[in-house]
Every structure is written in structure tokens, then in C-alpha cells.
Image (cartoon, rainbow, N blue to C red; front, side):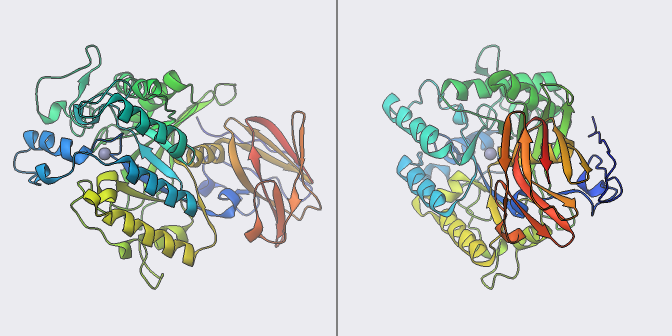
Length: 445
Ligand SMILES: [Zn+2]
């Protein structure tokens, strides 16, 4: 299950070898897989979105039924809908800024209705129009996730009915998932994904509602891997489960259950970790956030500054009701401020979908690399975009070859100008950036 490394003699230096994680690279300065384009990945996770339904309005009374002392929000005052006009406004702004991320489509939102059939309270035409927006305008820059089936009651996948007992044991957010096997979780996740597939949406990953699987992460990872493979054929599945806001802890993606690494069918499951809380508008759309917690007005401090400067992927987390904020758009306005400040301070960020981050980390962890003279040989079980590799010694040219494909990489003056299919000299090293295909490929210097 670990990345195996192979070694060839090198005339440039002693043979360099990679082990299973970059941090454990024994000769770290010799060969290093850098971040994509040598930039810092950033992304935006949107939870609790779906078509039309305001999940806070319909979810709060179901949570309150289980925990009557909590969930005291006056949910009847909330709008029952988050309109498509707002989805369009939000996506247009994000596209203009280059923002990418993840957008949930809860398949059976709070048990109101099914995205692939109908939702009581809206016409079939309205539902179709809403799905079309997500399919055509959201999907290009955002991964679509299910967030289990209902985000409230657990559904018996044999009957399609909620289990009768309104307790934490039969709510997706709490206990039901904690002692389930990978197969049981996989079946449940596949059920959720099949609804989205039938609604014409593509998924490579899922989001966990509330505490779903938080004490059962290896099985959650495995179940997600089974489900994504079964429903969509995806080999690098990913899931969003944890948020880490402690600056002493890593927020790098975690790669689970890699298998079949030497064959055509390599697969794995990547745990994506958010690095912020929802400091936008809260999950209920009633909890005002604060842009300064992400990045202060003087651009010097904040959780995003902390993570970006560590070089790890900086992935913000919000909830759709809080972005809309019952029509006040408070969360959206905070997000706009955060993005503007980030873009003012940094010129080395790269917005990525979670699926692209997952593929990159899977490739980073399991690609075998050997340097021999001015030749670099790669064997990759997983492909990814903008694979960025530092090798020892200055090359004089760089030609990428894979099968019948040959690309002459373009030399650029510095690390700052690296992009796809380019290379540069950095001190005594060479840095190369190219799309890594699955299988064997080579750089000839
Ligand atoms: Zn959620």
C-alpha cells in the first residue's frame, strides 16, 4: 500500500528516492513534488446546498425533534427557498474571480422530495430549470457532492422510507453511521449518488452531513471509494469530513486505501480537510461571521494567511443558507471580501476543485520517479493536472514523452511564471510542470 520507489544511477547526483509521503522523503532536496504550478491550492466548500430547498428551514424542525433543548431557531421565519436567481448571481461572481470548489446537491433534501423525481412545493419545470443551472453553470468549476441522502433522517435503502424512530440513532448527522461496515456505508453512499446520477449530475466525491462517520473514517473512506467506483466508475474518490483550525495540525489531504497500484485499475479514497470554520453566515443562515477571521484588513493575519503561508491547501468551508442569509447575502458579502483580500495579497494561489486536489495528492503520494542523467522517468498509478516536479541539476531543455505523445516544454524565466507544459531553472535545480498521465512517461533533458 505504500508508494514503491525505484532508483536508477544518476550522473547528476547520488540516486534519489521517494518514499510514501513527501515529508518522509529521505533526500528531500534532490527530487521533490511541489504544489501544482508551485502555487498554493485554494478552494471553497459549500455544504447544505441543493435545488431550491432551503435546508435550514426544513432541517431545523427535524433536528429539534431529536434534541428538543437545542435548535431553538425560529425556523418558521426563514424562507423555504433559496432561489435560482441567487445561484446565478453567486456563480457568475465566482467565475469572474476564478473561484473553484465544491457544491453539495443533497439528493432528498430534508425528506422534502427527490431531485431526480419531484419536490413538493415546486413545479417539475422549476426543478428541471434548477438542475440545468447546476449541470451547465456550476459543474464546470465545482465538484458536485451528495451529502448522504436526506441530511436529516436515515433512509432504509431497501424501501426508500425513513426509519420510523426519530432519534439520533436514525439521523444521518449522528449515530447511525458510526459502527457501520465499509460495505454498509458504501451501499448507503451509492444510493445517494445514484439519485444525483439520475438527475444528470456527475460526482467524484461526497460530503458528510454533520457528524456522519466521524468515528468511523477508514470505513467511510472505503465506502466512498466503493460507491464512487460503482456509480460513476471514478478511481480517485474523495470525501469532505473534517475541519481543522488548529495551526499546529496539518490540513493536507489524506490518501486512504490505495490499491491496484501496479495495474490499470488503481484506486484510492482521499479525505479532504477544510481549514476554516463557517465564519460566513453559519449553517442556519442566522449566525453572522467575520471576514477578519480569514484574513484581516491589513492582510497580515487570519486563518487563511496561516495556512497559505504553510503551503498546504487552504480550503474554506461554508453552508449555503449562510451565504444567502435569508436574502441579506451576508455570507456572500463576507466571502467577496475574503477573496478580494486574498487576491490583493497573493499572486501565487491556484483555485482548484476538490477532485483536482485529490488526484494531485494521490499522484504525489504514489508516483515512482527516477532521475538518470538528464532523464526523468515516471510511473504513475493516478493521473493529475499540472504535476510540478523539482529535480536536481540544471537541464538545458525538457521534452515530455508518453506513448506516442511528445510535448516540448516551454522554458520560463522563473518559478513565478510556471504553468502547464513549462520548466524553469531554480538555483541548482530544475522545476518542471506538465499534466501527468497514468502509466509511464518521461522527461528528456
Ligand atoms: Zn451539511
